[in-house]
Image 1 (cartoon, helix red, strand yellow):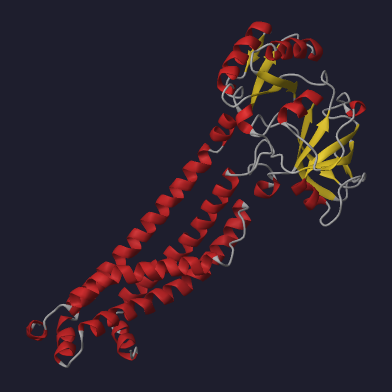
Image 2 (cartoon, helix red, strand yellow):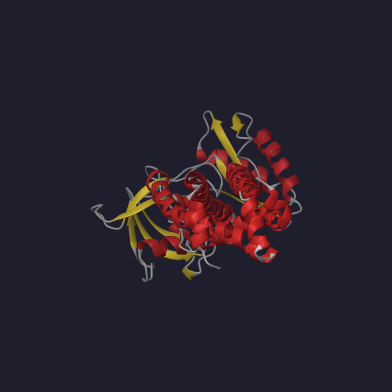
Length: 404
């Protein structure tokens, strides 16, 4: 089809054409970046915590006046292990989706010149490591002598396990075994685990990139107190957790149990990502509203042009133009407008992504999102214009030529 008449017609309606192009461009920019944000939230919500969450629960105390670590742990762990169905229980400073604890900056040299990032240091005794089901896929298990007391937040010199993601971040392409870290103390990497998420994945200083930047530090069972993990069969765990809160309250009446954190890890995950799910649905609503407004704009403009061009359509029909040719005319016109808007929208999408990266530390917009957004808008444009185009093609030539 010759597009010169189409361009000529659009030239006589510059303002209307420009408005629909800008609307499509804005829709393209919003669509691409909204899809990126939704994909990022969904990916974050499905991270592998490294723990079989439906078998593990946590008991957290928010205070215990006059308690010392050894006595408090003995009473709490004794009460937990006495509950029918509890298979293991131990002491840790936190667990994935639990209270934020142990976030510290680390360097790869003693002088602090080679920055490694802000890492999460999990400190756990032997029973807690067993309870969480942590096993190294590289390196060795901790020996009994590796479990040390805490000196100023962490042991002064300790072997540690790190996650595979953290190993690749710190020493890409190299074996991490035997490597060293410094964070006010000295650590030697003796093992690597596949996954173990930080307590606040996606909301730490390192953002989404640091969701698996965890360091597991072995400590003695009396080195810390106040946070405990336990394991039970999935079917028994809900009842076990209810019994655990009651048992700890009886065993340590002077302690205050944090009811919000003393839950199954699966419940902590669900609560942690509640805002992310809400944001994802909000963005879906934004996308739907933007697409609806764009479709209505195309329909309204096409309907207006059909009404304005009734006489011209009739003349073309009288000169032998078929209904298919009339329909294709409006579809081609829409294709030109949509294509122009998408081209501009891709530039806006890229620019908007650069702004989001700068101010909100979002991920870079993958290039394949642009053609996906373009195809979606092209299909939307063609679907929106088909109704007015068919109405135009259905106008009898004799009626059209008699209209003003």
